[in-house]
Amino acid sequence: MKVNTEFLQIAMDQFLPELAMAEKNHITEEPLPDYEKASINLLEEGLKRSYKERFQMATRLYKIQQSMQKAVITHKKSGNSLCGYIR
Image 1 (cartoon, rainbow, N blue to C red):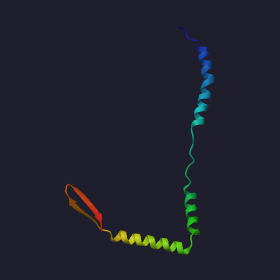
Image 2 (cartoon, one colour):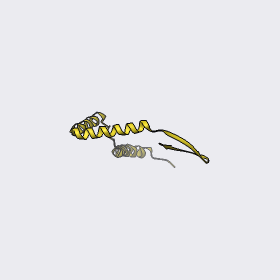
Image 3 (tube, helix red, strand yellow):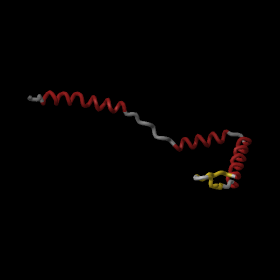
């Protein structure tokens, strides 16, 4: 069976660019994250808070830090497994 190469060449020239364009249209490019803008937004939000809110947050974080410093992790053998708890 003889294949008409001229017909195949015309078909390839016509349809391959259309397929390439269709593939390009389906690819979505996600925007790159802007870390600098995000950090500036966080700073602006922090500046909007009142002194009372800032003080309360600082004392809350201080209390958490103090309790984590005093925490002691102990392990107790119970049967075949180790059980750990924080005092």
